[in-house]
Amino acid sequence: MSNAEIQIPFACTSAAAQDLFSSSNNQDLSAERLSSDVGNIIKEMYGDEPPPIILVGHSMGGAIAVHTAIRHLVPSLIGLIVIDVVEGTAMDALSSMQSFLKGRPSIFKSLEQGIEWCVRSGQVRNLESARVSMVGQLKRVDTEETATAELEHQIEANTHSGGTSTIIEEEEEESSAKDSKSKPVEEKVTSASPSDKAEFKAPAPVSSTEDGHHYTWRIDLGKSEPFWRGWFEGLSNKFLSCEVPKMLLLAGV
Image (cartoon, rainbow, N blue to C red; front, top):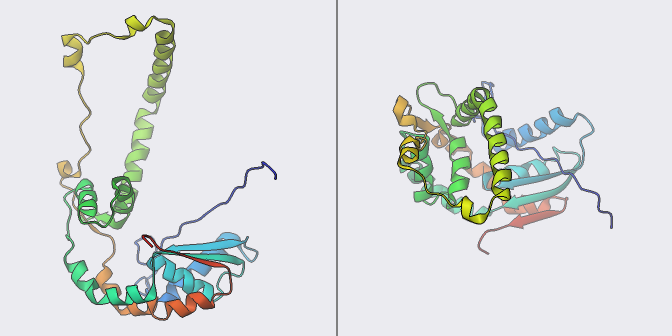
């Protein structure tokens, strides 16, 4: 076998109504519209000769992947992977969805509060995953800027303002590491003087509450209720009817 590296590019798309599209028809969240968007995005990316593509979707995204495949919207499709979505379970859950949405907090005083709620409520059990997924679901109340975009701007600003000092600190760390290797072990263990302890100050945590910024949900999922059944109804037969090789992944089974 060849030892050559295999490079597989991937793309993750944002659906309509996620505040990233300017179309006036963003309120159309039907399976037909969303699956058509997937086909149009792939055509925009690759033109009339797209490379071999495998569609992967989780939960509702998996349902849209099935609709995309069954409608033959991706001519170069070679595989379909659906994660954690089954028609029967999804349809049964729709009756309680509005109650679930009404039970969610409508406002968060900070991003950290939103992340904490995400973990404590059991939406996500892994804190690091919550820091990614929850931030993507929120936006600023006052500016309506997405929390993701806000964090990107902060990172960019910090990079421009602190780039030089970071390089200097790295050089100092490298030189100090070289010095420590050349010294006996006994010399490495030193106690900090009272003055050193007084000078050290731990960095303050970034908190949105300091500026009075509040966050809310980017998408009003309650307004999408007319489309819920269309996402999942007949999903099992559609999945089995897809002609490409396919895989269903279920957690805890």
